[in-house]
Image 1 (tube, rainbow, N blue to C red):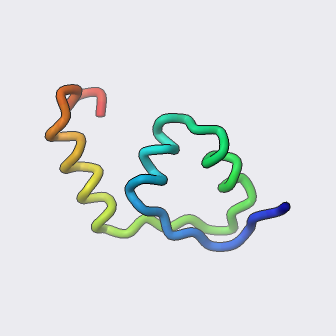
Image 2 (cartoon, one colour):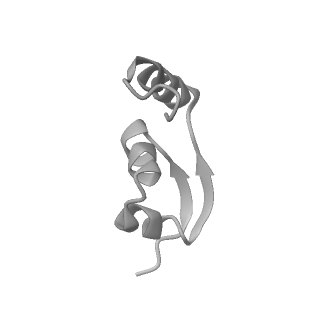
Length: 57
């Protein structure tokens, strides 16, 4: 099944991509466009700053 189109990513999906989850990565191989909302960027930054691995995140 070809999953193409435009995707709007949420925080959980981006974290899965950072974790190199194959199923999630495979879903985006055929994407025409991928968008990340500014609130999601904020959530990721907040989470990285609050983690015990701040520099790595």
